[in-house]
Image (cartoon, rainbow, N blue to C red; front, side, top):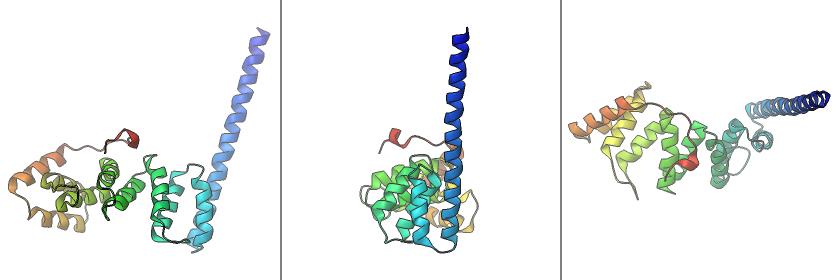
Length: 208
């Protein structure tokens, strides 16, 4: 009986130590993130990038997103699309809808990889991200290399984006529907009405 009590006591001590380390790590990470954000807000981008990268390497998805953006637009560093993709993928893999959107846009807009771009945009759009829904709708509306035009899908996604409100999105839907038949519009409306947002999915489970 005493042996069991000693075992339970040791286990409790071990769990307490583990939880203490994890809590300390979370607090330190939050402090490091705040320090990086202060540097960013002051325009000290090189310092901010260094500090955000340190936090991003610990798995913080918000830091990963910010580092990706900084590489994408060249804040505190030369523009580097490959580094942007690396960090966006890290955050997107954790279900970050903004990172999924930016990753999809990087792949899709220069037609770098249409299938990959659509995959990431769809993950973001399925969770209700307005800009991802809009860009996905425009991609189906315009078509392109290895992407057939699909007016029904275009109407559905543009309609969902417009449903968030916003005069711009509504005007884009109205302009797009001038290219569509009444039947295509009706099908798009039906799909939009039946659509429901999804929880963050595992990107590795998605098919290209």
